[in-house]
Image 1: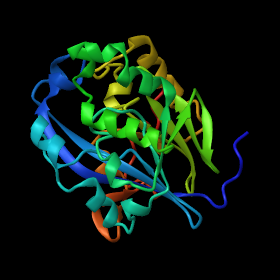
Image 2: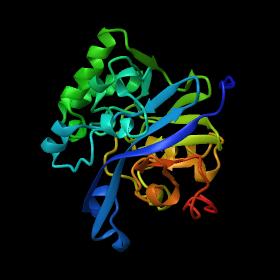
Image 3: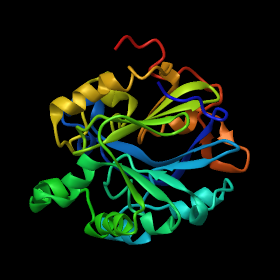
Image 4: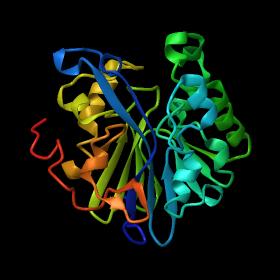
Length: 276
């Protein structure tokens, strides 16, 4: 059983980048509703209470944006600063996986312990990276950053499901990457699941139309079920890249690009009333 936290957490989604490109690039299957372009939002997530601050994923910076032709609204470090979080003092960063847009700013967190699935590190440093199709969403510089952090005893390896802080647990789902994990938080609004790329968009899951970056398709599809088995209400299961999050949850009073995931949704979320 998960230990009770000191107090429940405030949880925020913090926008640091947006991008738009042909819809077909975000779905394995491309039916007519997905022709045209598709907007994507890049988030960090922050869970904090009076005792601790935990950052979930650390985004990418200027070098990766330039190299990959991505837009960057602000560096992740600046995005966190806007809501009073100093990346240089954050004690824990949970990496849901090691793709460039989730693990691209490790050096910005010099005091942090990085929580990552052992299977993800093995995938990102092992034989799959021999193949261009597998490594295209990883940047070797970012992988090396995690390896260097490990050489400083600053990586906590997890094998499967584990509580990593009071009221915060990680759960291995795989699928999209070799060791993708989702994060369950005891929030002020009740249990919450940061699904990250286990659910790119709401419709990814609802239409069973996966993102085309896949390490294991059966694991990815099983992950669609797993994120709803962790005890959160549907409106508290948060997809990884859907711009709808920006319209569904109230903005932070100090930053219009940060959204209060514990707040009452401004309208019905796509998963409310969905039968699965």
